[in-house]
Length: 254
Length: 170
Image (tube, rainbow over all chains, first blue to last red; front, side, top):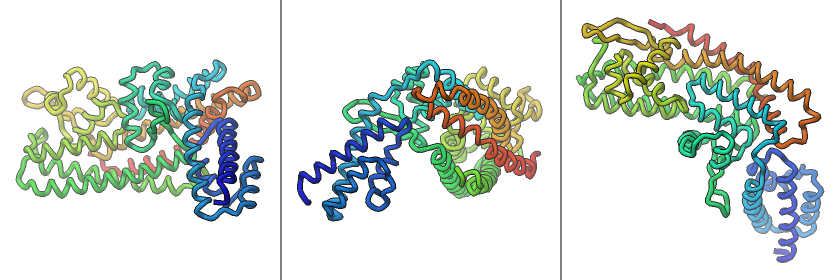
């Protein structure tokens, strides 16, 4: 290490960059910020004044790759720490001028969810998470007026599917539920997730077909085999439709 | 093949695993009674309300309500009345069971995006007044994104309609 002082100096500048990022951006992404720090030396397109200061310091001190690595890890720790603070302080109840639009969107989520056979609570939670990106169960309760139990039950499948991330807030005994990324990333994540789900479903049904073949002569075997063949047929149709959509210009341009 | 069949113990156990898998993975977020009953139609094809009561433990009232919804949506149909006086319901086809509801809801969602588009236009008119408010960027970004999903929905509708045409529904 060039010196403890240099390291501290760099950490302080880094802290200012992170604080500025959380203060100046209404939509924040921890993943994006960590990526930016990881690329700071290779691809320094960040134009902020403090970043230029950091780059200047880095070029002057000529850190070894090990030292650079240590600095990046320190920055990542700091991002997590400052992010927890940011979430704690971030207002989630919108001003009355914005309520009309927030409610309009929630209504859209409820109606579309209802059409898909989804429960109102599930669609509402998904809607609020899409608007606010990160919320605790308590905040979701305050926004939606649903019970603690209803919120907890409906968050489970979202977390299990990987669509929502659950993370413990540092220094608090609360979890934060997040939909990270921008719309394009979300759409692509959902697409990939569905493609993955389609693969898993095909393999599950094929396994069950093999298992069923062992129950020779048992009542219901033939009926269930026919029905499972129908499921396989549907999953193959779904696979074809997913490929068409994922390869479409619309998704590529998102 | 008899329409209403008893399943043997191994087949029944495997059926329960399939029903659970469908509910947790393919009907994610759907109402419990609706998705359970639809899943059993997928594994059995023919069912009576009495058999559904035994398979699911739901009350007669709940089963009757969900059966009516499925009849309205065109997922199932009344096949005939059995010798014991019970109505036998039939799933049109497995593929139809999955696709039909999806196609209809996609059409409705497509029309709902018009509402979102109008809301976005309204917000654009008020932009100067609203732009500094908390939540403006997030809401505007979502309204814009959903307004732009129309071409994707049209693409999906074309694809689904093609698949439905290819289906050989009994």
